Image (cartoon, rainbow, N blue to C red; front, top):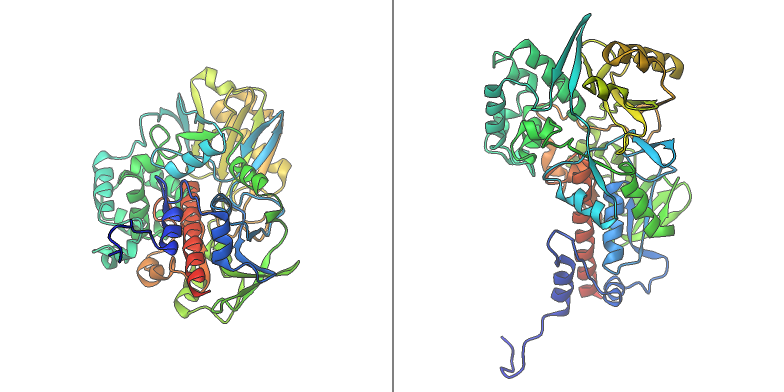
Length: 495
């Protein structure tokens, strides 16, 4: 109660800052932390001490940086080990302003955070191309099938999976009521008890390798169900193009989101600056050691996969739970992605959608990745690690021959070929997906998200929904920025 009933009450200044930081329709939309308040809150009179060091200039780290800047906080730096921004998104330049995505690329219904970011950055979207028949190879056998209406899995099997996913919260699957029981099983274990048709076994092997980085036998059932839970408890929405998570693409390629954010941040983004050591994360000021310099900051946002966090030396050592999570985090789902470029998407006139699946060859999935206007024809492919030569000419020739059997002889003559083997391209992308094994979440999941000292964990893997996707990266970046801003308010209270 105000001591003077005739005078309207005024909110506490610290509370006012928090309300400003949390204002908006989404987690951090419309952040309006006043510049002078931010400076006062962080006591920036200490020269050489930043409010925040953000490690990683992918979608998550750059989203956090953008939110901080929009909120009026200018005392930060983004450190990126690579010589580019974008993390696991990367564009091949095809010339004349056209690109083909070498990493993450699709967005779909329910992924509102990345759609909102695209709109804010004036990045347009367009539909993925999936009209027509896909081509399936099983040994020498070839089948053409229209897949535009769905996955083609046994509807009763899909219903069972969707129903089971409703019991597993995507935010914290390890806290599901039946977590212990589910986490004992791999997806393969569960499927083996369901009398699954051979064609469905092939389908699950393909979709799970693409979405989770491993076959059903290597992915925990609890992990699988939690991701389906994210997608409105619908396996069809998770894996499909029409109405699904692969429905939409970004004009200019997915990396354009990071490029535009970095351009607006200017010299606050430092490239080719890998972090080697973090000292004093349990103290008021943390030291972040890189090859170029030592940065001192009050808060550190690690916008990285847990596997990459494990490449940093921490002094003092991290608590055992978090350290073990990082040590054991699966880092064996790197993925390799190729692009054949043609003068036009000739397969469309033949009633084919460009999708090719091999059950026992190098192609996991090939698909039409042409630009919006179809001015070039592009076939991208996810290829099986170890099943295709690492030599570019041989790899191109091998894939061209497969495409010719599926699409016609014109496929033998691409005008460009691009190859991105994420397992070899640099040491900063240990894994593209996260094939979380059985037993992992119930033992280590609780250590994934909570901050430790002045360390805030971010990155797509830390998202409450759409973890592992671009949308999850953006959401995690928003959450990390909010944690930082709230912490700055707490710092002010102690000054």
